[in-house]
Structures are given as C-alpha cells and as structure tokens.
Image 1: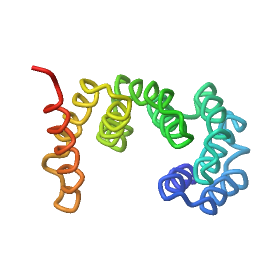
Image 2: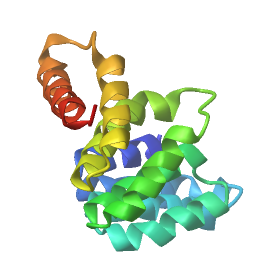
Image 3: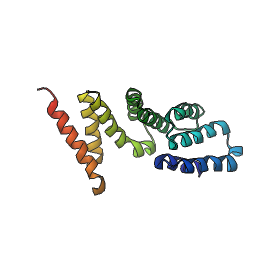
Length: 172
C-alpha cells in the first residue's frame, strides 16, 4: 500500500521513494479516498520528512491529524522527531513526553518508537542538566532493551553507562 511505502521512505530517508508513494497514491487511490486532501497532506508529510524539511513537515502533520488521516501516536512521534532534528530540544521534549503518555491500544507506534523515545529523552534531559528525568528515561530504555539482540547491546551498554554516571552525580 502506498501509505506503508511512504512510511518506509521516512524511516530510510529516501525522498524519491516518498515521492513515488505520493504519486502512486494520487494516481491509484486519491479519487476513491473519503478525504483526498487529508490523505494528500499525509503523503506530503512523508515527502517533507524524507527530504529532511522539518519545518515544512510540522504543519502538514497537524493538518493530516486534524483530518483524521494520521493516528495521534504516529503524528506525535513525527512532531517530536521533526522538532528534535530542527534543533528545538524544548519542543522535542514536549512531543516526546506526550508520545510516551499517549496510550497505544494497538502497540503499533509504541513498538516502533517507545524505546528510542525514552533513550532520546534521556539524552535531551541530560543535555539540559535535568538529572532525575534523564535517569528516568535512560532506565526505561535499558529495561525495555535489556534482552535485545546482541547487535543492539552496545546501545544498551551505552545507555547503562550514562545511567550509572547520572546516578553517581546525584547528591546523597
């Protein structure tokens, strides 16, 4: 389906694939979609994110979500990522925290983003000197990935080392 291809393009940061998904949707499905403009906004999100045009992606994410063409969990994760990569850590923290707090009944977005979100929040809070929040999120990441495949264990060890360093900095 064109939507999954668009999402894959974002993950792989492949603008050509994102445009192919958008153009394929416009050619094959737009005429039969209940809200073609909302769906087009979603496909423009995929293109903007794949092209690393973070500021262009943000209003498109809001539009696609407003028109019920993007799930709240995915939209929130993408907003966090766009603000983070655009160099706005405070906005990124707001959206990453919102993502963590949103229940995901199907576990689709959480399965894809939750562990990494905790890791990134740990890094962001650490950079801002918020030791307690950094500890909280690094600990959540380590717990989630403690049994990850061997190829992923270096990330777990890195987060564990940061966690130990932060815990040692705490008073008392």
